Length: 170
Image 1 (cartoon, rainbow, N blue to C red):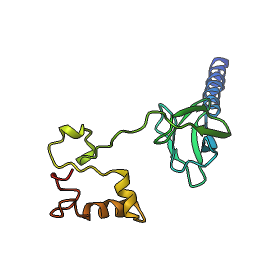
Image 2 (image 1 turned 45 degrees about the vertical axis):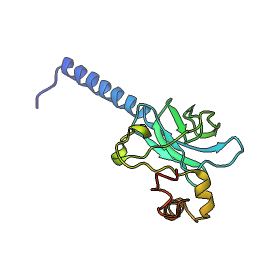
Image 3 (image 1 turned 180 degrees about the vertical axis):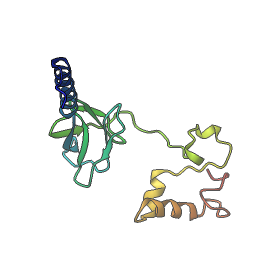
């Protein structure tokens, strides 16, 4: 057996110490699990609100009770948003309660085009139909898709065409 020199033993100890310190920093910077709830200004749960960590590809959606569970880096921010409400950013903590405020900027119109292309309604080169909220309410349909179908099938004022396709009666 060959006896080690003092210099190589000291070098080995220093190397092991540095490796230990490197891995202990990695253990310290672990993700935390954030549990929280999202409600509106009336205290009602917001179902389907988007909860994400900016700059990281991590996100969640609130359940039927407005609750969410998300893993994120320690000391990070969480952004909560929902259609019709102003987005909120809060610090990640164990029990987070977010109250969303209604956004004062309402939607004027929504233009749905093929493949998610966003355009102004006047610039779309193909058929455009407009459906008003009153038309949907008049149908008394059980869901949104059925209401759209029923509005499309209603006869227009001239009784010659369907209401959604008649250009004379618009």
